Image 1 (cartoon, rainbow, N blue to C red):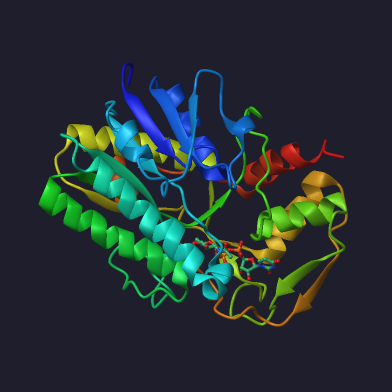
Image 2 (image 1 turned 90 degrees about the vertical axis):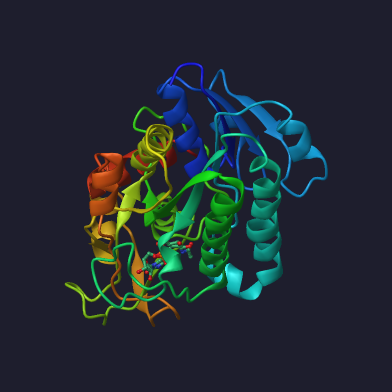
Length: 326
Ligand code: UD1
């Protein structure tokens, strides 16, 4: 990939910075566009250029695309499902309007190729497991709706403007770079693993387990956690595939295996050596009992499968970021 110039929108964020690292390791020249609302400057690696700016900023994208990019990876978005239900205007602005501005500006370029950060939330509640890409899409939160809507626009920009795209539907992103090159913690994390870490650190008194009466092995919720470094490599594989093969892609990025909330708690206790006080509270509204991907299509089309997504790997690499913090 030497000589390829890649724009990574949202590349200072938690997932974006791991994707940026994967492209740099594959030999690409990486330019990051980020408004630093949740991203962090220190997540960027030496040699990466940062353009600080927002997709809403008039003129910014037109200026940017006076230069040439071989590909654009778009991860800039708000991603808290619960918050999206109470602040739909924020999610409309950032996830919908921001993405449309980007598509509008970029799809005019000859040979435009865009990789879009989508989500398992486009499926909504599982009607069958594992969830493959033909599973019905019926988001149960506004966040999932915004991502599905952009998938629809990608399809149309593909037909009308010849833009090539890959929509990558992540399951539950977790873990940190094994070599510790990305240390910037997420701002206001709401997902299970960072919350458990904060309990292990003593920053939170206890963890609330949202329900222990699900029809799962131990009664707690089961999710398909996927290591962000695996996600990074999948983006590189998708980019290569777009170059080598005509056509577009919509693929799941997951492992095909789920872990329960209690397994995450136990693994964090083991790895950190710290107690994880927790209490069972009622189920959180909108949470399905069990979610896991079929990872078959990614394997067939991208030659990709998860490598670093063992629970112990994800918890250890995350704990390594937390353990030395005051
Ligand atoms: C997450 C994201 C969603 C994303 C999806 C990908 C949020 C709120 N949700 O959903 O945007 O698209 O992954 O599939 O960001 N849990 C507890 N206690 C806690 C927190 C979580 O018991 O304090 C449980 C949940 O009930 C669930 C599991 O842990 O069973 C994972 O929850 P979470 O990390 O919030 O992710 P999802 O809700 O699966």
